[in-house]
Image (cartoon, rainbow, N blue to C red; front, side):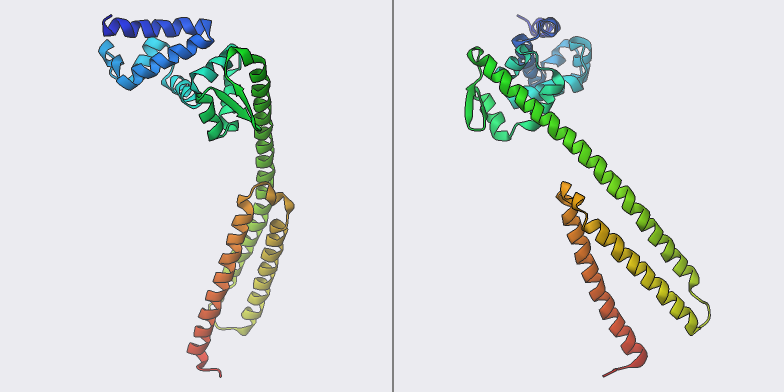
Length: 255
């Protein structure tokens, strides 16, 4: 069979398998993968893979790429079973995130392993496979829901503390405006009072945030707070060093 005719057969098979579904779609995906890797589509006059997908497969390159990725991750045997069990595409996407690399590797060997139990991927174990797949999908859906809830909570915390930071920024700007043009000891006292006020506000805001148990919903946040603490210690040390140098330059050795 000539190459262009063979490629036309692949495209026609894809259209037909889109209607039939099941294991036949996996067969078509396997054929399409070979065409993509070999770039045989160029023999039909298509310069790019995207053109071939749009005009011959009647699908976007993105959709085909997504399906080929699933074929690679799950293997044809497991993906075929999923389609025969009428597992929806969005649920197959959830499976991608719920299975470990070891589990995905096992799928390619014809085994679905979960909690120490190994289930052969074949027609004789369809009921067991369906039960486990449904369980994995349910777990993944709950995890995603929990992640979304956590994200919304963190956004709420972030919004709450942003207001406090904005208030402190306004205080700092007000301090800048108070700097006098002439030397006057009275301005220094008022300036120090405002600095102490800002420091107290910062200390209170940081403590309210750092000791809020909601931060443990994301392990990144405690790590960032530890980073802020290290920066504060470092900056205070730098200030102490600069302050001692400044005093020495102004007053000389105070010992």
